[in-house]
Amino acid sequence: MYTKKFNVYSANTLELKYIGKHENGWSIKGEIHEDYFYWVNEFEARKKNMWVKGDFEKIVTASSKKAYDEFIENFPPNEWDYMDI
Image 1: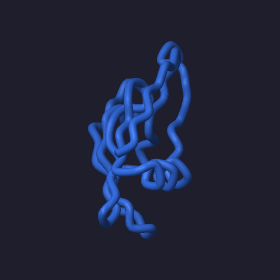
Image 2 (image 1 turned 90 degrees about the vertical axis):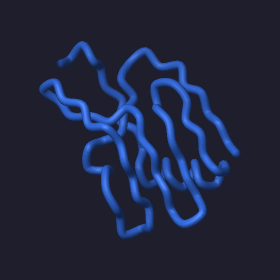
Image 3 (image 1 turned 180 degrees about the horizontal axis):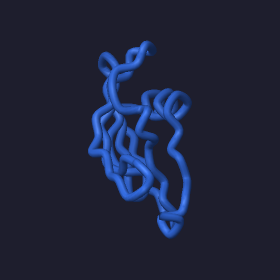
């Protein structure tokens, strides 16, 4: 298992377009928030025997570093400022 903690002072979230099933095999679930913008904090992603879940503003856990790296390569978090809402 692999865990990464985040210390961020701005919003570090998944984009709405990442929710759902993807051709590369990843399937991502998460609660969509809306306040002028749309974003996803907590999420869970799966691909075969790999998984990644958490919140890029707190902590993300993955089945392995390889799973985390592949997920980030395909679905990088978006950094923005909540004060821009």
